[in-house]
Length: 631
Image (cartoon, rainbow, N blue to C red; front, side):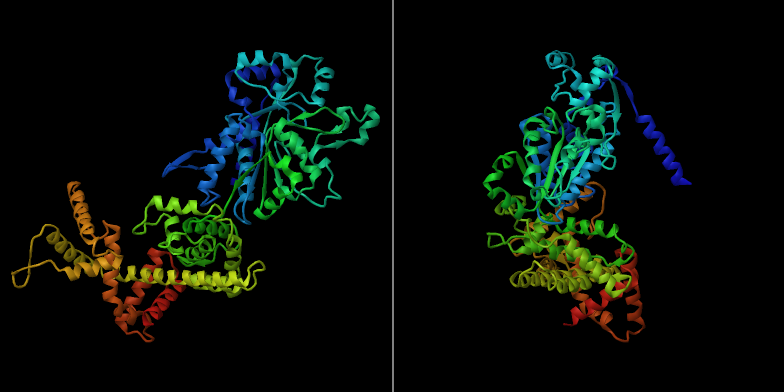
């Protein structure tokens, strides 16, 4: 019954949004809400802006896209600020076709779908409300009723510019139905809907021999010619082409560059002049954003053809590359899995991350800087700190290759391999090794991968495997160290005593003999080396620790080994190195004794409760780490 109540509530809301009145009423409405008269481009820009903008590292993150598109912040910022924003300001950019160019499964179709769904929802809000002449198949702007010679006066009074002329059908209706009294023309509020073909049009190319231009511009209704007597009577014409129905909103051209030329020429006048030719009528005005998408190969072929120069000059190309951040690639896989029927299968922690590492490595270009390998580049792009590099270095790397992210493995391939793993094994749990194995097998079946590329990708799988080895050891290290919490605290206290003595140039007192001794340099270095602190950097690191202790003390807080991320990692690694033999024996014992079994059960329980594993994946992890430590 809950769903029926929600349906009833939705129906009530829809009814409450409806509005109908005369053109005179509409003009009064414009006095109160002048934004109602915004253009299609302006409406789309405001829709994106109203969803929220967050500034991170001097980059604008548009929340409108953040729940569906991951890792494309730079491309989306460029799209909004170099196309949508100037278009909303009526600059010449709005007279261009927006062409999204990028590799397969890169998010182009998702982006357009988000704009369409967003518009459907936005026209149901106060800020996105759209009004049209009632009964018009093209949902024409009521302001087209204002005669040309009065439009300057209208602008002075309302501050609203009018573009476009009244359509042939509404010109006839104004005379015949309203006796020329434009103030009596009925106006209604409309709501965009792709399904109902209101404000959103979609055109997909098919066989050029059978596809008719009427799909775009409408056609003559032969059944009414006898009634109206002429093919040039607008009442004998069906204004039901995609360009007609997309008026006031968005027109999507799927695979535009595959279209026959005769379909593309209509876009020349539509983009530049805001009108198109249909039947035996004068040019018909249309206000719509035209967005198309294609891949790089088709685009290069298109621009190389001199016949396409006129259309090419009316296109703004926005590259939509693959995501280059491991963490965002994980989110893409999570989203795709949630939308599938395998969402209930347990995927062990780090499985998607390791798959994402492989995928990102295939998309990156080797830096011209000799000190940066692909693994470092992958980490830097994902926002990780790598010693010796800063944000300026990352920006410099991004400028090296304009085409970076336009090639590589696509997300669909990875999801296909994950799905294959799940189905083939017929189990309820998979891990990183299962997926890496499946990715490797899939390379042989991939039609577009050359032998040279295959060898390169196999190397990336090996790199991802090595990364997983470290992640797996670190995961087990964490849970074992947690069992030795007191040992970690004792080790840290010992380290801090020595650091304080070193920085203050004082001596320590031996707890057993009472004699004064120098700081234990060997102990401090054995901990610092765990996280790559060099001999030259040790003094700065130790002073940083003391500053952190002092800052916490001033706030009445106590420093522990979790208070400093890098120190925590160093302590854990050092303790794990000291405990390695214990871990090795515990995880690899075929017939563990009672004490070992108790420890294994503790570790498994902690992996399940605190780290997201299930019983199967936790035991698999322990066995794998045991085998690694025994090598």
